[in-house]
Length: 607
Image 1 (tube, rainbow, N blue to C red):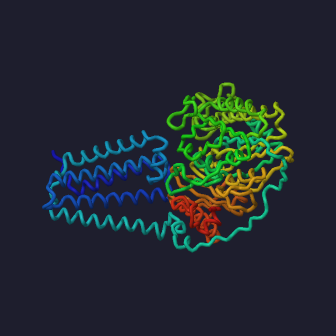
Image 2 (image 1 turned 30 degrees about the vertical axis):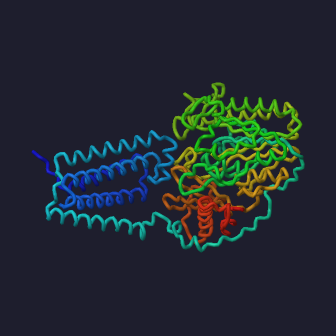
Image 3 (image 1 turned 180 degrees about the vertical axis):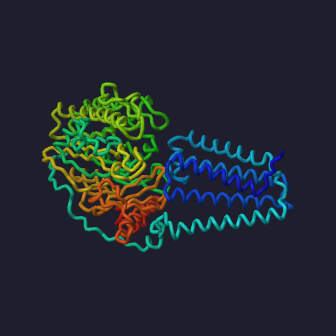
């Protein structure tokens, strides 16, 4: 018995199957929020509307389109649409985000094979669905007048329901925050000039041309360090140094993923340059700490276990004024990782640095050393003798949270701390402590507590991913604890100022001052921007057009999102203007001329 499927049923069945795919994806992701349920209805009516329109267009006899051509066009469209939809659903299952260009770029950079597999899987599944529908169904013959009327009636009903769904969101659900897309309010906004006079550090540092060692750690939140209150003894060397240093208790990273955080801190610039994931460019104005010191006759070195090719960071970092530099790719022999994430074991970077210091330390000139350790980044590689906490099979992460992960992470951190200790011990054993500055921080934090159900880093701009250790060891200066919130954007400028140099015009940062707004960004598969000002934190999700508001003095762990009201409008507009100015500056090469006055205020751009 032949099962007859008409054009209306094809559209109905195909739309239903795609909606089932959406429900399955929502179940896998585990998000049954109002937005997720709304999206199920939204895509169901969208799919039905599109597929009905397809049937209407290609089932009518037309003198310029033969039956075979119409069949080809209809099946091609159905296949392409279904493939794109299933691919987008795969993106959602992978990232929890809709398939915007931003999201696709992120996955492509992480895993090109995954993108190809998603497209191929979508194509195969789409062909399977459509072949099944047409196998014993219509041969794409012209629809009879009665069926065409039915198709058109169903189309208009579906289109009306689709429109009604949008209206329900706009006037009732209000899933998105209108202020985010209010271009008129943003265009009229004039940010107040903040009175930033009082310095965070009141230090008279008089050492002339001291040695400078800058150690950048990887993915370490301040709360994982003993001096900051962590109960386990995993950072004895950092703790000992912190005890005789200036320590910042609230040091905020400018980004929560390395390709923005690292180049940003090294050049005192925000790396947000477009509405899409930024790939480091080579023509942006920038100056690095070693450039300034090299001009004053410092010997300069750079030793890292990282693959600087990750996200093209090597095209942004300028190695010209480094007398000696190495990263994991320098000798083309790496210890682990693949693609543009090939790393060296941290002890190799330490060995290279100590060899360089041995050859440098007796010269009659000061030196600058930059170190970057990667042991606390996935897959958390460390020698067996650092297996202080169990279990640690394969030295890999077993899940996004819990004791196993914390044990493994703490072992890796103990290993990295030992590398820091070797550098400190070398300086002490060579009697250089009284004339050597140590500046230590982490590029960003790492969420091991799953406070917001996210985990890892680069996924949010909550404080567990933003607040990092900040240690300035300044010989001859009494140790002190700084409670004032400060930003990485001002990290290098403050050091430059302490050493007696002028702050370059290329820096967006300046000397740390009280009350300065703190901006941050995550632009991976998500697009999040944030501002901290006067104990209030605003987070704007520019992908989903959502706002989160927290009072950090009352809610330091950001667990209670405050409902938007007008008292927060100025801070939100200041944040949106910061985002606009960043992109406008780079897209229109504002460093050459025509700087916007509002952007000078909010972003500290200079000609």
